[in-house]
Length: 88
Image 1 (cartoon, rainbow, N blue to C red):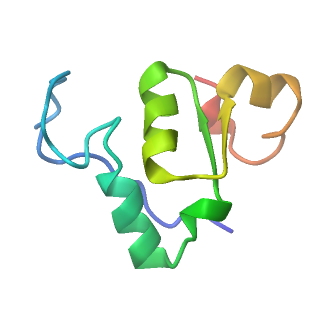
Image 2: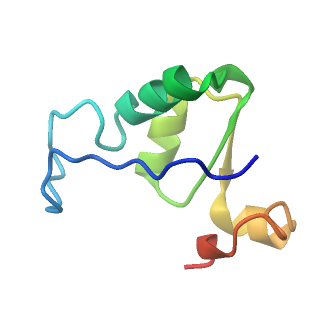
């Protein structure tokens, strides 16, 4: 399916606040829960591709079925042809 929306924490005003209590700022799962509700996504059958400990914790908190490290995803060509913007 196409990317329908890019969601981000709007409460931080673009500033990094590592200890923010905001429910939608990584590694908290608020944005994932909002997107799942809005688009009818079953997080239990979804995967998370990430590159940090916060991403792993986010995956655990959302209850996704699998977490895959970004480098592993590229090495195994899991993302081939899906989204080139992940290559940052």
